[in-house]
Structures are given as structure tokens and as C-alpha cells.
Image (cartoon, rainbow, N blue to C red):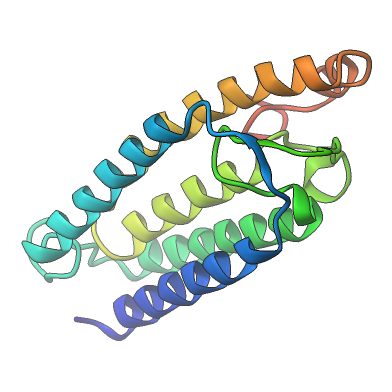
Length: 186
């Protein structure tokens, strides 16, 4: 395993430890309507990552490993940018944060920080970090990015329907002034 691979692995572990620790301060969920589907998709994603790690596809310096220093540098930059975006968004979301597709008690519409430009910056940041990991470590991370990307787009769509119902007077204008995942594009 190369040094950059270990740095990225350590940063992913630290990120997820922070994510789990910060979940303790979130508001209560109103209803677990999509809880079983959300848990099922997370289990599938987790098993996919474990399978890739177990077979050394993600960490082994073999076919699929990125050898270009430029690509590795760009990938590491995208990885850092993606994690930073996700953390920045989580900070601005505050106690309104929750598992994907959950509805919070006394939810508020957050439109500041990264939410000023992107409606789902946590998802965008995680996708960017996974693509960065693919460029820096191995192209097989694109499989993880694709699977979780599909899940995130689905989750974002469900959450947007919920937000439209919870904030019928303010959410439509907010939706028109921002993009779902990629500023100025999508």
C-alpha cells in the first residue's frame, strides 16, 4: 500500500468517526417511513466496500491502480474538497441532519453556507470524495461512487418531495435558485 493510499484510508476513517459522533446531536426523526430501504441500501454499499477491500481490489497495487502522479494529485485534491464540502454542509445543517430520507421533528429549511448553492451538498461532497479516491488510489472506487451516487440521487429526490411538503411556501423558490448536486449544472 502506498503512503497516499494510507492517508486517504485514515482520512475516510476519521471522517466516518466524526460523522457517527456528530449524529448524537441530531433532532429526533418524525417517522422511519423509508428506514428499512435506507438501511438496506447502506448495508449493500457497506458489503460492496468490504468485498472490494477483502479482495484487495481497492488497496492492491495491481490492475486498476492509478500510477500517474498528476492523476493521484488531482484525485487527492478532489477527495479533500469532497470531504470538506460534506463536513461544511453538516456543520450548517446542524441538528437538522439525519439519515437519508428521514423527516426531523421541528425541521427547519437551511439555505445558508453550501446550501446557498447546492440543495444536497453532503451527497455531492461524498460523491466527489469517492471520485477523488478513484483517481488517487484505484479506478475500482468508481464502482462504489456509482452505487452510492445512485442511492444519493434517489435519496435527494425523496427528500425534495418531503421538503416541498414541509415548506410549501419557501421550498419552491429555494429549489429554483439552487442546483441539486452540482453548482451551475445539476
